[in-house]
Image 1 (cartoon, rainbow, N blue to C red):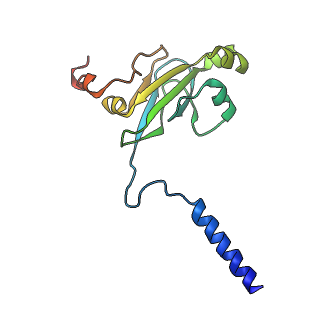
Image 2: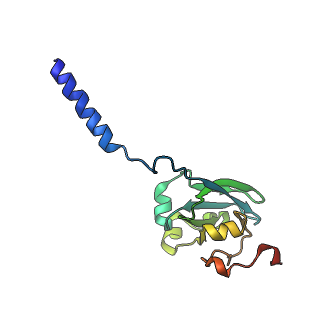
Image 3: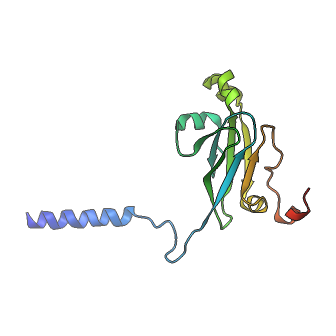
Length: 156
């Protein structure tokens, strides 16, 4: 019985030691920056954020999750964070409440009725980590190289 217990303990230690994977190197801390999303539109919006591009059928497959957020008009959310090392890209999918009211889930998936935005860390930094949704298709989500950015104090 004692021998069985020793083997059992050793097997469990082996399984645990091989199953545990360090997410980062020892002594290296990963810092995150919070991103603010402000809804200045007249509609409530449902937004989904992810570090990978995701289509509507996948989003609906998730069901309600921490990455799927409802934001009422004139509200602000600070639920998104991005690594400060610049290694991540933020993919944001937005669906307006009136779209959810007008179309069925199947129609939204089939017709891909959503607004998709892509943000790099450098672009978000340039925008002070703030995304403002106005309700119109926005043109500010392009992946620009850092040298293409204008200084923020020169923008009207």
